Picture 1 (cartoon, rainbow, N blue to C red):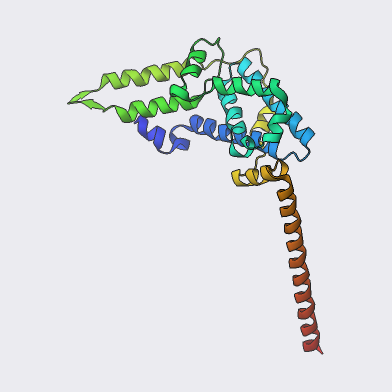
Picture 2 (cartoon, rainbow, N blue to C red):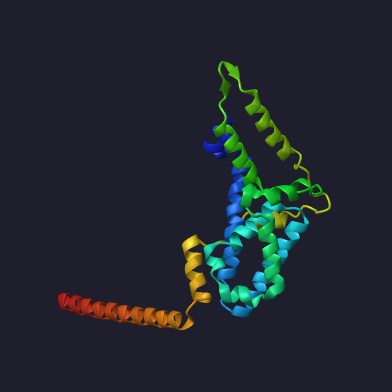
Length: 245
């Protein structure tokens, strides 16, 4: 059943969908990591600009799944709170991001994105999240049988969704395959969500003076802890020397 594929063991029943969802999360987290892990404001500004440029290029290629990966990362709590970093890129790049957001807006069930997708020139990579949602609603919202008869209305709706997905399964023939980039994409480094948020608060604090005070206090507490441990170690060594003599 379709419900088993959508809600059951995806890795077994739908390995390609499972891999696509995993890669979506990896890329989104990588985007976050690239920004929050940059300590210098100028380098962080340039890195954010570069990521926005890549997002714009993904839109030009009609790679909507990749575009949504970037939008999700940039809209994360760790990156979204970094006001100083966003202000540093200037109005031109802020406008780029606004366009990306509007294209992939979830308002009215992704109405604007769907209109853009249906008029896009092939090849393109659609955002699979909308199809998975459509299939789930179709599966859960319609009975399998109409009395004793198979519900062919439901089957027709599901077939239309799957047929639409299949029409986008075309290669980008003008883009050569690069094995090194493929391998790199499969091993993207990224931080856990809580680690990324903590790092974001350090590199782009809302209250700079308070953050500095916090760092100084943490260092002071750490020094005191080390000092106590050294004193305890010295006492332990002294006791061992007495025992040995």
